Structure formats: C-alpha cells, structure tokens
Image (cartoon, rainbow, N blue to C red; front, side):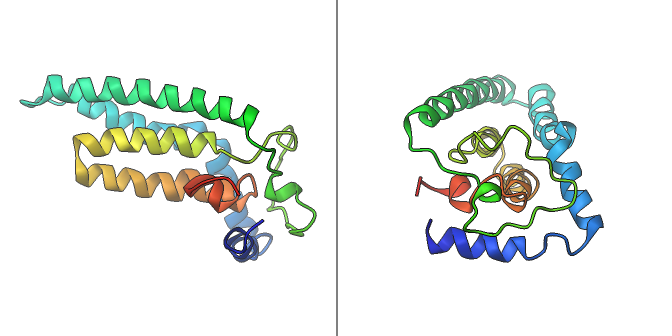
Length: 168
C-alpha cells in the first residue's frame, strides 16, 4: 500500500463514527441506486430529446457512450480476474479502519477493490455527457466524484487510487 492511499484513507476515516447523521447520509447515497444513477441518466435523456440542430449528432454520441460504458465494465470485470487481488480498505487489518454507522460490507470481503466498477461506469457516462456539453459534462464529473466515488472511499470499499489511477 502506498502513502497516497494510506494518508487519504486515514484522513477520511477520521470522520467515521463522528456524526451518525453524516454516516447515515453517506449510507443512503451508497445504498440508493436512484440517487446514484438517475442524475446522469436524466441528463442523457435530456440530450436525447432536446430539440436542437445537433439532435442526430448528440444521439449518436449517447449511443456510442453507452456502448463504450458497457465495454468498459466488461473490460473491468475481466481485469479483475487477471490482476492481483487487492484487499478492500475496510477489511485490511493494517489500516485499523473504523466502519461508519450503517455500513454493511456483506459479500464484499472476497471482491478485489481494484478496479472500481462504479467509477468506471459513471466516469465513462460523464465523459459521454462532456462530449455533448462541456459545462454540463464538468458538472457530471464533479457529481461522479462527490456522489459516486467519495462515499465508496469513505466506506472503505475502494482506495483512492482504485478510482483515479492504476493498481498499486
């Protein structure tokens, strides 16, 4: 484990069990698929039905973006089979991870933390949005970082480098 991951995990984990309200808020984000997916899907639907001179061009980009997202997930799952196993932070005894209130990691102990399927899917959808509208695309990247990725690092499902770069 590198110093980048360790220092960020320890900093973020310092907020665990400090506020039950905050932990419950993060739990609701992690467990509510509507909160995670509906925003980006709604943006894609908006661009699909938006009346503009770029309608066919935008629809083509949306179709390519969705197909690319599915391919990225398949590649991610295949990489998981061939890359070395990476224990999730909440299960790593060296980190002394404090589990937030409401966290139930059932079944995740045997899954490798790298790569993050959530990060791959939502960042690829955000890239699709970015190719249609730079301004809304940047907002969707920020949304993905704060609403999709941060809670997964907070819960110890992933190391920060599982989301933003390469395997350790």
